[in-house]
Image 1 (cartoon, helix red, strand yellow):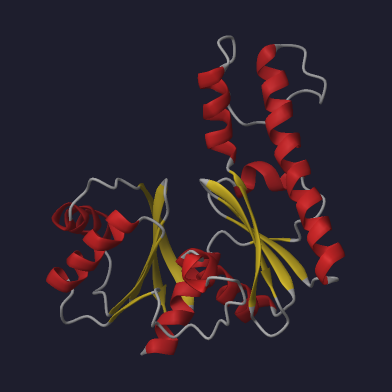
Image 2 (tube, helix red, strand yellow; image 1 turned 60 degrees about the horizontal axis):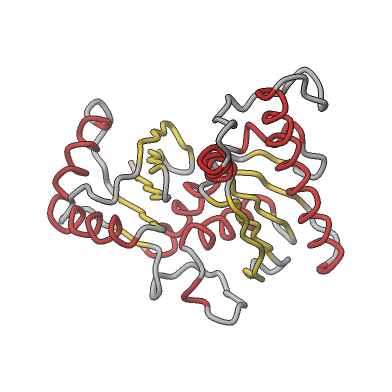
Length: 251
């Protein structure tokens, strides 16, 4: 079984692959203070009833966690082949931006998975701590994209800075015109972020031409995409699929 680990700023997602099939996945909170030993204990608890791990593929957008994860692999998975998505790893993704080293490993994994699964050109919208828009060419190249504040951190900032506003559950209100503070916040959040996605996607299409798919992924995607007019595919396992392909390319 291949263990794919996607470390994000807010959550870490684990996926178990039997060949090309994702058979199980887990989502835990990312804690940059955790040590390699603590991560090992966490993974042991989650994977206790699963078959033996025969390979590990990892990407991380948190340098402190990447360091500890690397230590965990070197200490506890010493006889297990592992691949980390970082400079030097074979991804097959040409990164056509000013400074390729600035591009997050998760965006490379998403680009590879999107092109492998759907071809191109396409756009990936990753709803995480930030909302990432990744543009993938017909050849599978990463062309760049856009980064916007994520849904949760935007609402957190609003609640912290506005004395009479608070965090609310992200569900559709009765109408766009909210009749109370909670509904007004829900309307602004859901329809506002859906409108942001549609607006940026349409501007990208106007600049690069028509795309085959607009693929949504990330933990907050199910909240926003029902209100989006441009998202065509929801693929919650996209980054994990990219890690699976990277592992195959490197082993």
